[in-house]
Length: 338
Image (cartoon, rainbow, N blue to C red; front, top):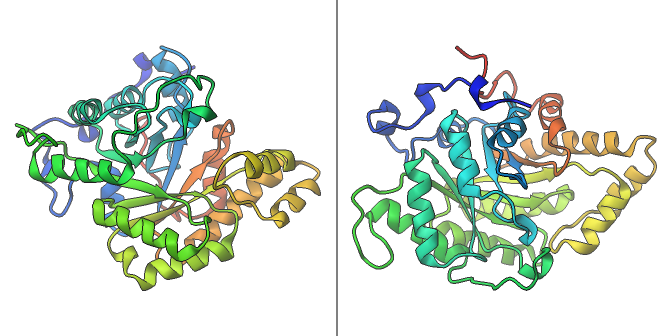
């Protein structure tokens, strides 16, 4: 286990008002993730599942598995409608030691008052990226009796973030003395037919202020190619950075369960057949993920890839390395750098 006392803080990447990085032209945030994308680098992001714990060293230990392999780390917000350490707290811990966390905000659990407060608090603690989500329904989680909120949805949340950041104003009209400098994004599932309707939904999110888009798992490259082709034709890839999602499957049975039980997850029969015939299905799942990353990078209009490896996070760095999608570039990490 990594202890927080052993971690050095790199002041170049920790926000403070005098940080010259805050003066960068054409950047809405002070964050490294935005700079990587706007330099035209192929970016890699991943997800950290917040622990069922109050121990911050568990957060540091999990984040360390991604060192030198990813440009930003999503902190999920009650994913699957289950309770974990808050996304705001995880992102604050990661930002404090120099990581580039992405604050996920689910509209399921909080009203606009609480959400705006979280945005301000996270920005004050150096969090530079935010991802707007509607959120899984509470019926999917282990506390189905919980009340749904949904005061905002992902699109109205994006307009809220944009108003706070660009107009320095709360939804009430009350002025902020310091606006939250956040790079805003959202999600899309390319595999809910028809494709054009999904592209239209993504366009609405971009119109509402999404500057980057992360997608649901993409195991069907022909379908993703059609989606990206339509996005390119509409000029959306010139307005937002699109990072298709890929994942690693532990077994054919896992793939079948995901396909049957998680709304919007599309896994072709060919993938399941390949896993079923493998001697080591977990290794084969990782190999498939590596190949998908390579194929994603070849698609016109993509700006990066979002790697999801639930309960296999320890393999993310190896898969990214094996894929070669970063080339010679080595993303920054807070350890052993200075």
